[in-house]
Image (cartoon, rainbow, N blue to C red; front, side):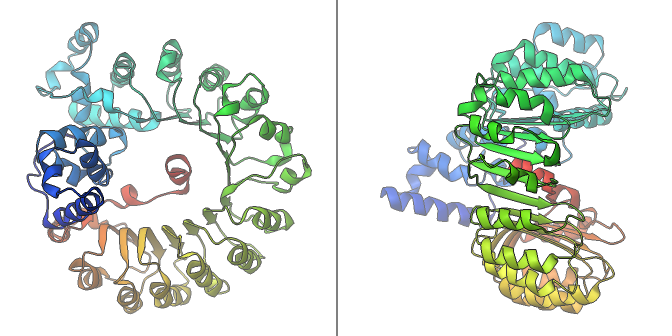
Length: 523
């Protein structure tokens, strides 16, 4: 439960972090820390608590400091509950407690009430939700139903629709709405409910639409178009091959609400060879700031439409087997200064060439995801990491299981060139224990918030993690998966030991950041 109070005290490490932040704010305002704790400065206190927005255990502890801290921390805990990967979905019961009388009667008819725990809530938690993803909501309801209800997921659709009705009736103010459509679920009821209550979606800032429906359901797609057209404050949109033609006419329309609000477009698996009027689309968007190209083809077609005004290319994700040609080189030359997210999958014959161009043109990369690194490009890769380390925040390195030599070179050199702080480091490589020790010795002064490791060599590296990281508190979240799919999270004694040193062990799939999540959630 998201307001669970089992965590009674703030750990010493977290308390030190809180005190440091409080000291910074209080020094600026020339006021004492005691005023913040006593509640005399609610605005300043909120800025302090907001620092731990994604640290749920600390937010739980903040609830118990006093009433003010509780009132400020609860909304942060409840703004995106369906995305929290704790395996505990009891918060759904708290939402159901807010159903109207007719819906509660249905709960009784379906005998769902028989399995609900009594709830005595202090807040209207449904009003706090800011981020909603249809897939996450559906999966969460199914998991809760399967675990809680004797009859499983037979009434999941009723529960899903009930939750949407609760959010609509409470007039929640969504920041982000992700509508992901998959053929094996029925979304028509949800879409129709949204369109019947248009105030629910008019002021969303970020709308992500993704259709993976092989049945080409035109009714669903028509509903999606209506949803886009209703937006009054749309800032971001994701376009892929399945929905681009539908949105093209909308974006070309001078009457579209998007013209003066849309500042970010993500092109996802688009073949530009078949796209027309791209220049006119860009010309209609008066405040367009950033373009993201993910696994797109025929990039040279972008430059055949000469009237397109310059744009800021923020993301470039190259798909498997994509050749480096003049169009890519031109992209890097024109937009390299803006590029923040780069991902490269698979082998190509001109790997060194694009790496040297990235090193030359792209100094501001924050998210770097590199797959299938081989011996020929290992040193250019290391040069690239060192070249962008002043801005680098997310780094993912993938080396195939049969390339031990490349992995050894990487581990022996990487630790020396990493920045002093990383939000995320993912190593999916074959790891030899002695090489890993060299890496940890070199990197032990770097703070890594999330360290994700998939060891393809299957040697025991846990003792080295404990030796070099555990007592230094240089990592916050840890995930280790072996080649045999043994997850550190399932080793209870090890998890408890790390917890004593304020390191939280998470499931590998919960901590791992894939490129689609980066596109839809972090951009």
